[in-house]
Length: 113
Length: 114
Image (cartoon, rainbow over the protein chains, first blue to last red):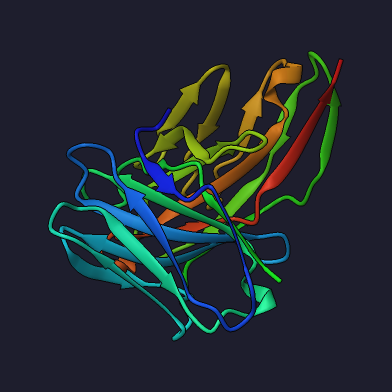
């Protein structure tokens, strides 16, 4: 158990809908990272927050947004969902920058029908 | 930009065989390098890391040496077990973003047969 929790574990929804994925980092970790893992794209970095502030953006679509709250938990919002958004979404946390080890949660499997 | 290239899988080995998974990188400066492992149905977990040239990371019988001259960080294990079957990811910290972004390779799936 990495100490990072993600909810829900599975999510099935329809095209055009909006969903929210939630991540709670390890106690004391200030950084939260979001990744998308799909069969054809591998593990893609989406976005990084540090202590409530956005610090780096990767291949995140405009339909996706994220935030980190004062209690350090983070949410990833996915809207106008398309079939191609079906993937595993991982959250990871670390104490500071990614020079440190990242601790990954178990992931949320999103299926868009 | 920075990138990580690792050998394509799947790699299939018999128990007690020697394992090498190649990883090369392109980066400015001296990034930290990592190997992560993902077991079936789980998230990634750090296997080992190296933060400067000639450093050797090691864990659970796995080893990798940070080779600046060949920009490589190959993963090796002398004798694999069935329980090592997993997907292995090579990764680096992207210094261009102040270390806040980690770039992962595509992953190499390992199957170990009894």
